[in-house]
Amino acid sequence: MVTDPQTACFEAGIKFGTLYHQFAGTPVSPDSARSLERAMAEAIENQPYCESVSVRILDDALEAELAESTADYTELTGRFMEVEMEIDYEGVRVRTEMEMEDGYPLMKLVSVE
Amino acid sequence: MVTDPQTACFEAGIKFGTLYHQFAGTPVSPDSARSLERAMAEAIENQPYCESVSVRILDDALEAELAESTADYTELTGRFMEVEMEIDYEGVRVRTEMEMEDGYPLMKLVSVE
Amino acid sequence: MVTDPQTACFEAGIKFGTLYHQFAGTPVSPDSARSLERAMAEAIENQPYCESVSVRILDDALEAELAESTADYTELTGRFMEVEMEIDYEGVRVRTEMEMEDGYPLMKLVSVE
Amino acid sequence: MVTDPQTACFEAGIKFGTLYHQFAGTPVSPDSARSLERAMAEAIENQPYCESVSVRILDDALEAELAESTADYTELTGRFMEVEMEIDYEGVRVRTEMEMEDGYPLMKLVSVE
Image (cartoon, rainbow over all chains, first blue to last red; front, side, top):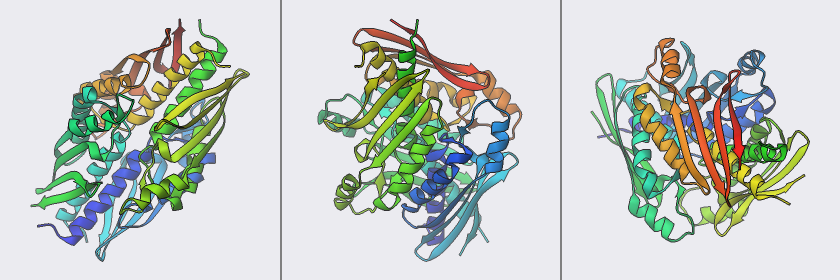
């Protein structure tokens, strides 16, 4: 048997895997970060049960990376972004977020209500 | 509060979103289907808590698609594959699968134990 | 030996392959099409020698697809977009475009000057 | 006007952009590197005019990365692979390769004949 809260959490995970692996590798710079944040959020909000997505690309982290390089853009990866999402499946609300922890982008469940 | 079964389901969802959106769009033909199946499975098995992944690319569906076209390959998408996965998080075993339903690739939880 | 016009064409091809395979598979609907167009163009414009990118997601084609389905979004693929790009490599200007031809998204060189 | 050698170079570029942005971000470890190499090569060989593709995932570079981390896999990116390709368009043979240069994965034309 599978419960609604379990399915809600499964759906939340799908959205995170989608967001990360659809967009990781995208060429990004401080100048293009705003349009990418918005497109990522709106793309994932299309998916079922997805109430809201917030993507913040970290300009400071991007600029620190670019300061050490000869290029003026890099590839999007977990250390350049923070993500929050809310999923609503059959009245179960799941809040999730992704942030760096010990050098890794950690996707986690914040609450299931 | 978040329970272990909920986290196990969240982890299962992450793997499905990753698998689908990392590999959707890959050029594929019956000749290259076997190597792609294997690479997809082994790639996702790297992820935490992922016990096993089985990917089957559907040669019949590929061949039907190619029979209607002038090309000899197409882009991987949900209707050309079936996927099964087992996740083990803190002793909770989650079985999931993806197959076509009403023309859509449906990712679903089979059991949480 | 490799000439500057040849390298300019190689660079143009890289941008097209990048654009297509980075973003193919993205969940898209008429509501999210504008932000995705802009993010795709700005992402690729980050790449070296890329003067300008124009992406047009075809609302008519999206709506026709969605009219036949029970979902309210689909996955981005070649038949839902038209792309134009200009590359400038060492003074050689390359114009390229992608549009559907015989049911396939065809990427082609328009001019090399 | 566009010449056959220019089109051959454009086609070569498309393949490189495809290979890189389709597979960048894939979870990879020394254990899964062989299947990924093969799938990448066979996927791109499906594309028109593509004679051969060779992908080498650099176990040494992977292992050096993993030695500094708590994870046992990482995401595929340019510094973990070397690629060679041959394109044949209307009798024009283009050889290309990608390797690291100054910390960046550089895709380049080796010869056009």
